[in-house]
Length: 172
Length: 172
Image 1 (cartoon, rainbow over the protein chains, first blue to last red):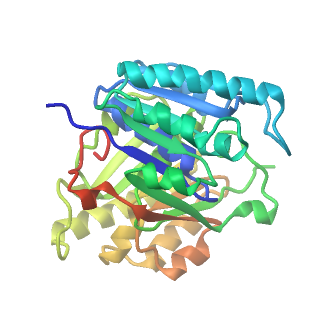
Image 2 (image 1 turned 90 degrees about the vertical axis):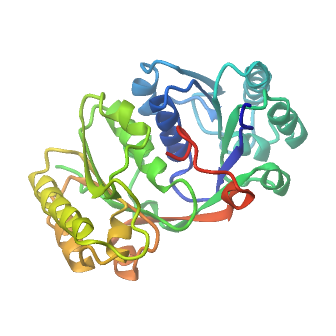
Image 3 (image 1 turned 120 degrees about the horizontal axis):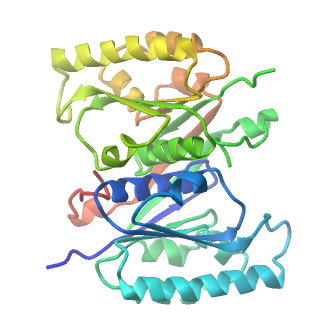
């Protein structure tokens, strides 16, 4: 019998959400599993892409523009995110990947790029064995309720407040 | 001028501390940096090792026995951790690695395998450009004070409480 895949949520304002998801991807790949990473909102090339793109068993798609959303999303942000959710829904349903990571999907909700109902429909429509990881701050209560595991990454101290800028290979 | 490396601490009782450190390692490697991972306390072969050991630019050492410390540490736990701290101190001082991860070093403190003063001496004796990441629950206040960035991973919900066992490629 196949085990049911869990839904893991990493949220909160602290550093470590996306990196935790990447670490999970590496662990799963190390166990011979297939991994799909969907990066919502951010379309920038983070340093990890250089390595992740070379790994067997990993597929990665980015559904965001090459910049942060500053105030309110543009139509391009919405279109990319919605296209992403459609693609990811199909990936989840097909079940060819053991682990599907929806990086920053919670932020996509925050900006109303798609709705919680649409995200939950995609997650709940998955092949039952698929493990799902969702990241992003501002997770709404409905997403927390739907998850089997929730870790809140709480910022206790951050060097940004000391004026340290985002650094290649560390923050990006 | 070389930037000063920061000290990042990931603590708390939630899932995601070690995986966040691994994700940081992947990001740093993707940027062409050299990474050293010291795993304290746990000497078990987690799935990620299969992949990490193959990556260029990454060195990984384990300083623990092949099981968890259940109640109190044995002499072997102490000897391995102390040997590890000696080796890591030299690595930190040499500065040939851009990122040095002390996985579960906070747990090693919790079990008194070495002291906070000894750990801080190793960290503070580093070549100035080296970025340090420390993980593990129960971080003492002195370690929190010494860190430039602290994220507390708080367990809000965990499927262990539903009877789900640790799974290959997900938890181990």
